[in-house]
Image (tube, rainbow, N blue to C red; front, side, top):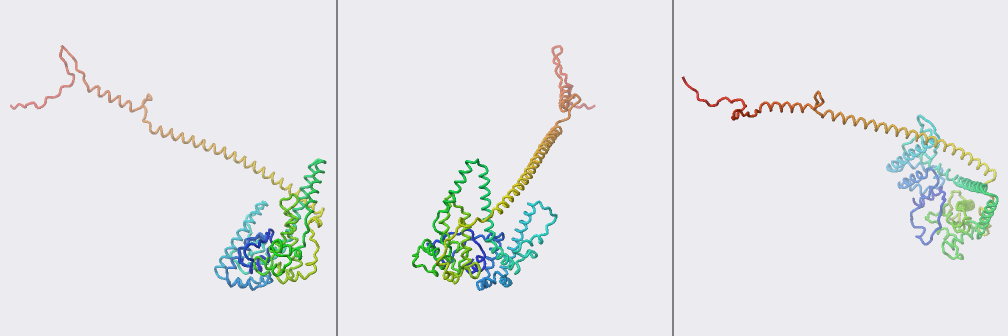
Length: 455
């Protein structure tokens, strides 16, 4: 995605959670470079990015994006240009929308399944209405209304993203305090006193840090100029500083580029190697710093800082004579005791619900085990029946191959052999000796070839 489109459409809306210091030993900042895929935190983040990437491939729409102002984009007026894009672009956008509708249907089904909602037939159109970033009545093609809804919804959602991040951090802090109190309750008095003392020592150690410059002040910017950029602080030049930290060269400082400027200040307070330093608190501190700069510098409220706005901010009194930045430790807690009590009540209710679900799952598991045993028994019975049938078939086949037997159980072919033997014995005559002469008992053969007498 090019710098111009990034500044106008996507990164003018996006908020960045993780940032890194800028290394000035890398390539010059105005050269074209690959961008990081920063997650906006929206549940339709991938769909949003893919639509923008496809639109960028159309020369006409790309030109309109580069000449449009932020209001035209946020108000959805740019969506009217969709009718002029190429056929292959519209085809790809249609495919993306169908994929997104399919994904949302899967999410809805999973949600209904998790709540045990029984529905004979799902009304997808009605259910899809809860998603505002597309037109639910047309689920097959991507139209101008879809682009308008996508941009307007993303703008609204991202503008509420800071508040959601603060709320998420508050819940994190309340959970941490709840776990601390529960742990202390589990200890005897002596161990509890020792643990409380240790915790207070860690808190005091965390408070011992160098002065933190107010973000956006001359002291803070000069420190970045010296420590990060490696330049002489006496030669600080605001315009040069701006161009150095406009990493993509699009003429504005977006929220990612601004938050990168606060890394040196945050490193004074937070070290991931220290037990007393909480990295979640560091990111909340980074968010507070960015909001402070935007509140004082971003005059157009477009979530971008132009060079003109940057230079004007340096004319303010707060720029040259700022107060020391108050960290989270110096401010009042992000939650009240009443909020903590309500949070703990929610945790108890959730624990009860989880226990109920666990018991339900245990019962279902037992039922599955019983069914498994019954199926295994049926399997064994079936195997035994098959074996018996197979044995009977073998026995029957053996009977079919065996010759018939006689009245006394002897095989019939033995009687036939005995009969043949008797017949042979009758035909063979043994010579008898009478008066010294051997008498042949064989029957006399008729004379052969006797001469015939004539009368």
